Length: 405
Image (spheres, rainbow, N blue to C red):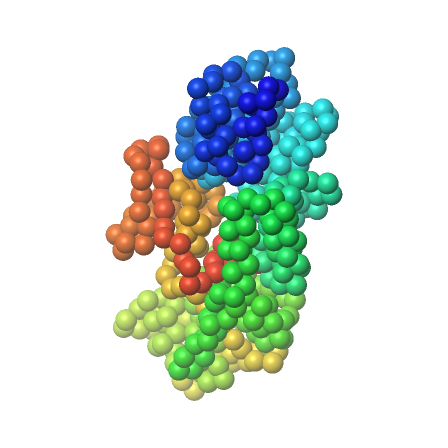
């Protein structure tokens, strides 16, 4: 490696993308192309970065195995930043194995961290935790150590393990300070700020209360029956009953929980669950069927008893609480994904939400009409953006935010 390439690499490691470009902007040898690609990625020019990295990989040729593997890792990080999540991770795993075998441990761990972060974006929390647990961060450069701790902190927050999350954030802050990379320090600060922002709302008769993540965790451990409108399920202690695929049952459970300890009129339940403005005998028969299904589904958590005018829920725990999302709307999870500041493709959003692309497209059109999101590009290059949600934290709205599905 000549001195100019070495100086450019040091500038990139310190987060000085412009300084690195000044040294290699006019060079077209493979090493310079790779460094230019990484610099362009740091500046947010992801498409240009990908093209440069691919040119570098071709220029290195088959005999430069180590250099080509590094290009694969860099291109995978660019794809992650572009929110292109559909590619097979096998090439990244193969590059990590090559780097490990040839003694480049730092880049091998970097490749595996990229794989973990991809799993996080897809909501595959358990797989991400397993993959991260298999990494040994000892001896990592400070910048990579900070990324590893940030990833650990996000995993802990999505599982509502607040103590481990705070500890990981403290380690990430210390590593970022040692790395002296402003962008990394800002990312740690933003992650830490999520702990102080409202993450959900506790609904009660006549009002609501904003809750931080630590308060949500305490509420879930309180022994009360929690009707969780963030994850669409019921929780009481360690028991979790998801109703994400049973919207009618969840609507009934939420209506009963919001009224607890009072009962709910049958016509009000029909309107809430079925959207019927003029209930008839058919609606009342259907209500009895759905209440029976709900009784059977949550028998371990609560009883549902008939009253003179409707039904009442009788929790087996210390009470009933409704936990609502920090923002209203049926597309809260979609808005939460888009608010990370990156441009998402429809296919990536569909993967992350485990929904069809057509369903996501309809939701995006609706949100765009309401001014909540905007699109850039056309056809296959079309991407979607949303303004950052700086007043709240979206942890509980992200896919698979809680570990007890």
